Length: 312
Ligand SMILES: NC(=O)c1ccc[n+]([C@@H]2O[C@H](COP(=O)([O-])OP(=O)(O)OC[C@H]3O[C@@H](n4cnc5c(N)ncnc54)[C@H](OP(=O)(O)O)[C@@H]3O)[C@@H](O)[C@H]2O)c1
Image (cartoon, rainbow, N blue to C red; front, side, top):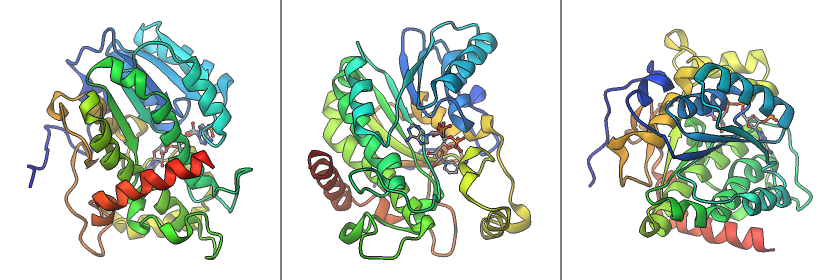
């Protein structure tokens, strides 16, 4: 049994605090969904520590505005914008084909949550296609660049919503079962954790580690498909009166910690929340990590199923 990783940081730490004293000069990072929500603050903290940062976004006008803002606030001019639509495999392939040179940090941050049933032209359920399949193809396409970096880190932004569903291998795309937006989100977020487990197993020999995390609850554009009434119900589930939203700067902290902290050197296949490795989930609680999300056999199976899906 490995020792659980703890750090001096907590739920209220900010991205700027966790990266303080870490020099990312000459490191190159990609942040998907870097023009909204916690992606902006993740990118800002990495740029503030000296990294070259590419915002991989589907709305490049929003990306340009964010890049200008990050350059203005950090003084780091090496902030770039590149088009990426994770639901479109051609777009992912174009992004990876365009990428040149090593990549030290890949933050798979973009995501959609609890959307109504939507499908890609291939018939893939949209949350799984965006949150998992797109990021899988992106990381796989950038594997050579990550290996070339020597000690690269891939950050897989998951959620406590993974507790809502394992990957249902018999019907990932809701062909037979009735569509349920939260089950689909939960399944995709479990896939983000399983990707960290199997990605580390396969790529650690290339110096690449992959970890997953729960950023916390942060009011962003992510809640666009969720009514106020439903949000209140979720808040009650997550601690009622004790519930506190994090700011985007606090929400980005665990991503930045996982991307940069020396305490995670050589560490992979794990799940973090509130700037520390999570404890196993206890039934009934909305904290911790589900055993099914760290299951090596499920992780390997998901990798194989994903490769078959993308090859079809
Ligand atoms: N906020 C929370 O409470 C919370 C809790 C747990 C986990 N998370 C996770 O944290 C991550 C970031 O969420 P956030 O709260 O910062 O949400 P957000 O503000 O909605 O940001 C999500 C980003 O993903 C992008 N995106 C969506 N679909 C995409 C696609 N097909 N291709 C490329 N980019 C796409 C969005 O782009 P557009 O702006 O173009 O739509 C947006 O920039 C997500 O993975 C989410 O699951 C968030």
